[in-house]
Amino acid sequence: MAEKRALERDSETESETETQSDNETNSRANSVGVDIVKSVKKRKYKTRYSKEWMSNFPFVKACGQHVPDKEYKFFCSVCNINLSCAQGGINDVKVHSSKLIFQFYLSIE
Image 1 (cartoon, one colour):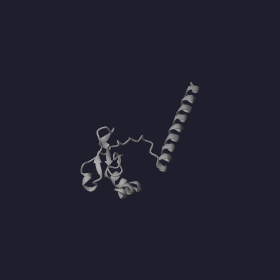
Image 2 (image 1 turned 135 degrees about the vertical axis):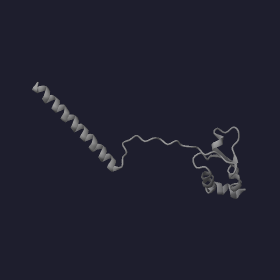
Image 3 (image 1 turned 90 degrees about the vertical axis):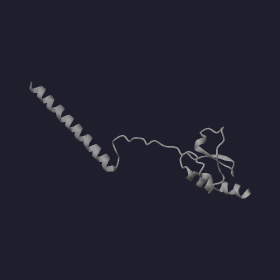
Image 4 (image 1 turned 30 degrees about the vertical axis):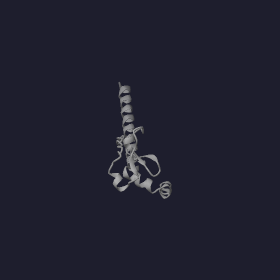
């Protein structure tokens, strides 16, 4: 009977020690800036081509029918290529128009 009580006390002490060490680990991780809770992934949205872009950028056109994911791309009539606007939208058009290859083809026309 005394042995059972001793074993129960030992197991309680072990579980308390494990709980304390887990709490210490969590507090150390949170103090470092690591979040223990699983983060929820944000959904990424794609930007579609807009005909309104043609007013500011006359060289931009919609892609042809045979292009996969054409609603997320635009056609540069100066460079004669299809480019993606899915991640940056109109900023992708601005970045493309500032590139050297675009400036080169623009100077040729």
